[in-house]
Length: 389
Ligand SMILES: Cc1cc2nc3c(=O)[nH]c(=O)nc-3n(C[C@H](O)[C@H](O)[C@H](O)COP(=O)(O)OP(=O)(O)OC[C@H]3O[C@@H](n4cnc5c(N)ncnc54)[C@H](O)[C@@H]3O)c2cc1C
Image (cartoon, rainbow, N blue to C red; front, side, top):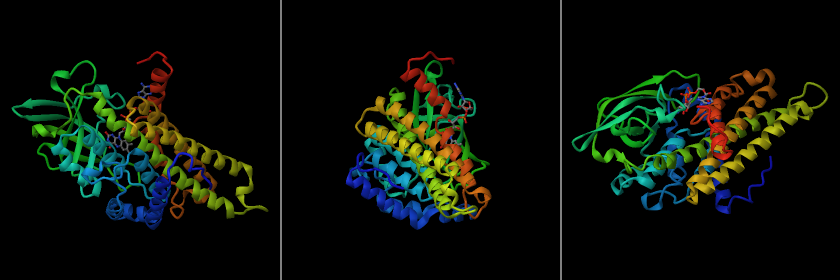
């Protein structure tokens, strides 16, 4: 499959792509399947990717990172995904948490967290979703109140990924005096062993090493410096992390879509039940071609979003990151669906390993912001249409 990458990617980007693809190839789908079957985590791949500088490629050099941005980090995740071994926690640890701390953290917080997030020795999860808020994050009720110099944090979160393997979770709460009205979010670093910080694993129909958790925060006492950034900076700080999350989810979707598509193309080239391989039938070839086009288009939007974000245009990046996440989620779902179909009965066998991607690909459509909420965003923000809610 040819891709005209040179227009938008520098030689360094292309070299990074090739190097990460080579790493991914050494691990691949078999590695992930084994890790999941044995109930383990992706420690080896995580450590090796970190050692090679890939996990911290977006973080500032003075704190051990690569000094790049989302353009580079998204390349890493996309290529690992295209090889069949995506690292979901990259979306959270270096992309959201690393970025927020790098942009808004105190000097002390940067020194404490960034070198570890960059070299992979520290991992951070991110919790915003709540049972009664869901897509409406303005409705979150996790509340921080002051107690002397400390904070006491109380609330519930759901679907938070990787809390079991994370050294801390960056929790989005709101301050007590901001309980009503518009969301005035504030971000707290909650260490994994903090008293009153409980977690229950949610049973998911996903074959992935990263698990999702319900979190219960019951008067979790945190020191003053657990607050990242300014109590009053609100949405700006939050979106400094959420836009990278969307760009990275796009990378996750594009990588998975490419992986599935490549499997299907391989199969369609050689599988023959009539006179010619099934790939010569246009009913098989055209949907695969369309899936390829849609993945390429999604990547273009992801590159745009990453470029805008890295150039400091948070507003422009917001729209582009939403569109990229939407495009990649849809392209991923369609590519996986078509790939499974292309393999006929083999599409559902464990041997070919595509069927579990049907569930996995839906994550890119639902999280971190659903397809409908992006359509809402574009309707209101880009097109100026009125709101129904
Ligand atoms: C695998 C996985 C990992 C996740 N990891 C994390 C994580 O690490 N941290 C974290 O905080 N969260 C995480 N999430 C949560 C995820 O971000 C949410 O599931 C997502 O934001 C949707 O929220 P919800 O599930 O409450 O759906 P709801 O908000 O209940 O939405 C249900 C449906 O209604 C639609 N809907 C809602 N409101 C509207 C509207 N106004 N107009 C039209 N349609 C609407 C939605 O699009 C959706 O289809 C994860 C989820 C999954 C599946």
